[in-house]
Length: 72
Image (tube, rainbow, N blue to C red; front, side):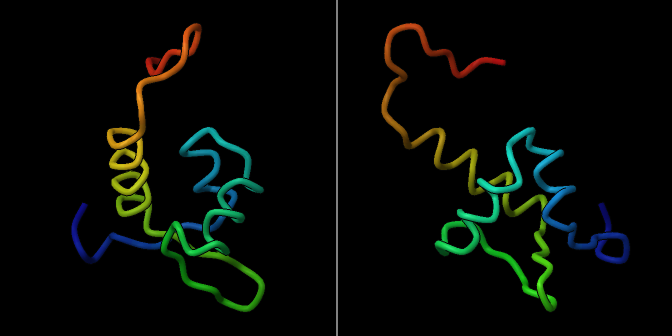
C-alpha cells in the first residue's frame, strides 16, 4: 500500500477486518492499548498498525490452555 492510498478505517471496518466485536476494539482503543484517532464520535484506525500490535501481543502471550488453539 502506498502512502497516497493509505487511509484510516472506521471502527466497524476495523472490527470486520479483524473478525472481532466492535465493542472490543472500542474498549481497547479507549483503554489506550490500540492507537486511534477520534473524529467527533467516530474512531479511526490504521489497520497495519493495529494488526502489528495485536500480532505482537499474541506472540508475547503465554501458551494457550488445553483445548484452545491459536490457529484459525
